[in-house]
Image 1 (cartoon, rainbow, N blue to C red):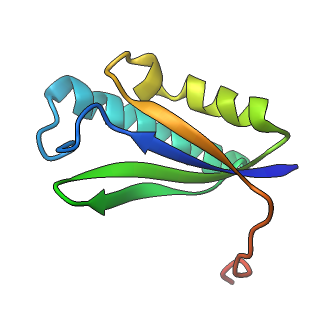
Image 2: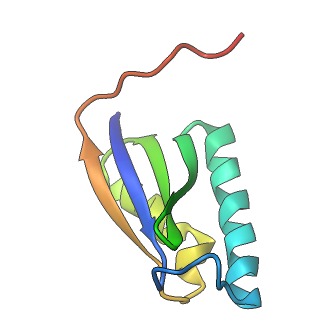
Length: 102
């Protein structure tokens, strides 16, 4: 198994503060998609990162290889929506994480 950092870049630097109805509906499907991947075990952590006047998204995933990370990104409803979002996919040679909460 391998780890990857996925950075979701929005179509403009002011997103989500000026998100359209269509974009926000796609973001809801995006969040549901990553929730399913977290429950399935491939997504370790996922969430928004606020920066400047906007935000971008991040996920750390554990998958078989880069192709599997790309497949996760390509299947995200925010990507399939065709609204101009895109992922950077960066390999992580190792991670340190806290033990699961009891």
